Length: 124
Image 1 (cartoon, rainbow, N blue to C red):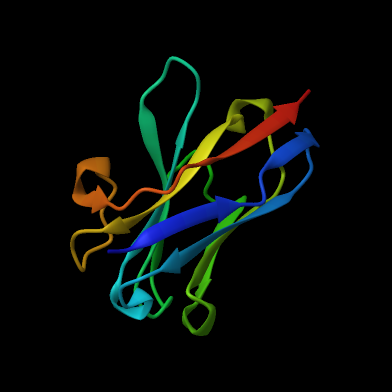
Image 2 (spheres, rainbow, N blue to C red):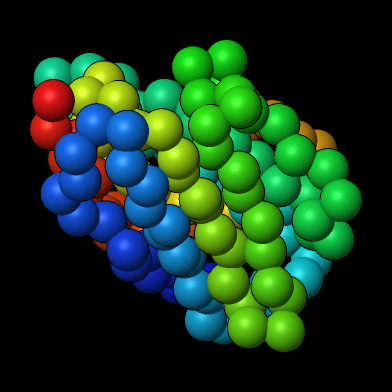
C-alpha cells in the first residue's frame, strides 16, 4: 500500500516562495502519475498540478500556471511543488495523491492514497 507524506509548508509573505515535497513509501513510485491539490477552509479540494510517471508531462490549474512548477525524482520516491510569487489566495492545505490512472487528470476522484497535507499560509 502506498503511503504519502507532504512537507515544506509554512508561513510566507506575498511574493515569496516555498517548495513542497511529497515522499512515497510502498508501491512502485515511478509507475504513478502524481497530483497536487489544495483545500482552503470551507472550500472544496481543488486541482493544482499533475505530473506524469517520467516527469516529462505536466498540467497546471490556470490559477497557478506560470508560478508553480511540479517535478519529481523517482530515485528518491519524491514529487515536488515549487511555488513562486505566492499570493494570499494560495493559502490552503496542500495535498499530494497518486492517480488511479495513467492519464494527467484534474478530477480529484481519480486519485487515491492521499497524504495528510501540509499547511501553506501566505500573508499580505
